[in-house]
Image 1: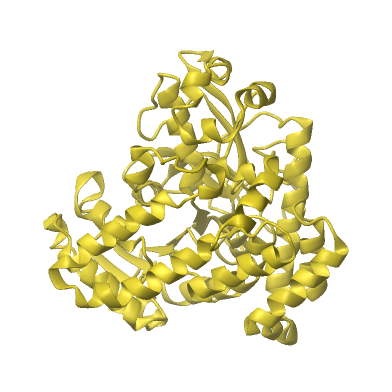
Image 2 (image 1 turned 180 degrees about the vertical axis):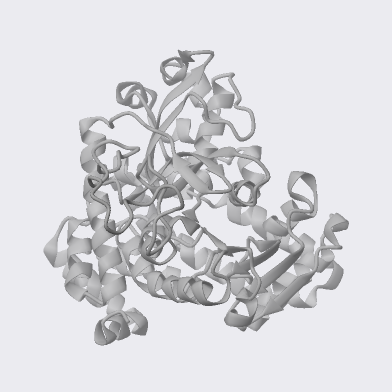
Length: 482
């Protein structure tokens, strides 16, 4: 199988290569193609791959290119992790919000909307080129904001697009270890999790038919053994009856997060931007030392993750710093999609217990009645998360096979959870409409409707601020998204 990484100059690409070079995924890919718009970044990443000590994967051919149609030819899988505007764009996403006294975060709130508005048009270009050059390929989307991007691509790629994130799966695994019931790889039996990307809750964790989550939520010591358990006060978690995804810190502890970010000397984006501006030229020229330099930078980057939520001097766990997570989710999904056996993963996919159709047509055996048939219309699909639209993209446990990802049914969220999910989902859909159709009014409504903004005046100021920073937005409105 030929695997294309769109965003092949990305910082995390060596993690994917390392996972492909050894262990359970070795031999899954016959050729790896790295595509990026920046040849200098491609050369830096190639230098890291050449210098990796785990060269058991040396037989895996790697080809780097800045020609996307050429890169797509013959691809069986496409893994997308692009960032239009680069890390400088992330800095602007954060700083425009912070200048207005709002939370400045990459995927959550105003910054996430701005990021999506710039990213969705580029990902639609990728999807359309896939239909032309590799129509049978799967798209594994790690491009953020993953839920919104995946939802925007469904009309083009149908079931062939799946969104991934390591945050939810990592929460489940860490909670299971803390509760003393570690889960076997590829199994989520007894796990209850519902939400949207970067907005979800672990609400059930069964072992031998017994839900151990209430006991975990009552155990201060056990909660203190993993990051999500330390983010929130134990009485709050016990009252909630669930473990929130780490990104819910920005909702439940909004003021604390906002003030910590405003007090920091630099935003997270500024730190990463400065690091990469200095690092990439050094990687390209480092020869045998390239991997060592990259590994040092990776650990430094992991240490700064969610720093605003930790007390001064508090360090992340070694398991968190070890890196790896999103590439295991991506490759496990690819492994199952390629026909190597089923697995269970928490993914971003359509909120329907019926398999999603291919774009423009139903799946064989699941399509509607044939032309001329008098058979009644099929019943509306039942949602995996009750209370949310069946055609919306959600983040839930799924069974993944060669035919795609099928969500597992979940319980009805509590009223406060469902209200928040519906509000943010409406924001996501407005953002997708704005990006796809070039609808500036929809973008304005998305900013105003987000619970971390909640103001028409602030929404107007945000949109104007992002328009000043990004020519791409002004072009989007001018050309109507097409």
